[in-house]
Image (cartoon, rainbow, N blue to C red; front, side, top):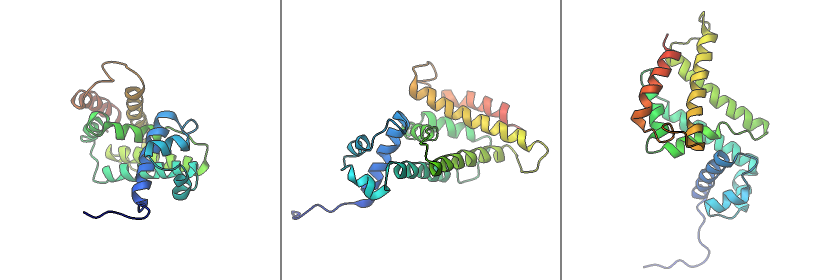
Length: 197
């Protein structure tokens, strides 16, 4: 058995990951303004000064959270998205084993920081996912009803985010405790009505 002498080595990547996870939860639950860097650091179990070291500021941490959400959601949806699969995927994210993490990702996209760069990142993520939904429904730029199809895709995206919001902030039953299979059918009906060509 070896004993470590001297100061403990810092795991920069691990510390960044802990801070990002804690910040996502805090920003999603409390909002940008109410979430403090001290609370985020405490949740992560690290010194508050490390936020400035790794992210420059609270704004930088928020931007990193948004960029991370975009990257993760983009990887999850990187394969070809089909209209038939979308309701099942969303039901899994809303009520499956990683529902809390996904809910935080969606709720984070609703939080405004007042920082112009962060707002641009947030808007880009939302537009990207609306584009994916519209494309799965057959939308192509320049189609005769391109604007109408995009509007329907954006309404679909807003509905999914609204479900996550209601499930996380109210006890509205049976929605709050609905399981993955409970959600898949109604989501399929809604998506078919909104997105089917």
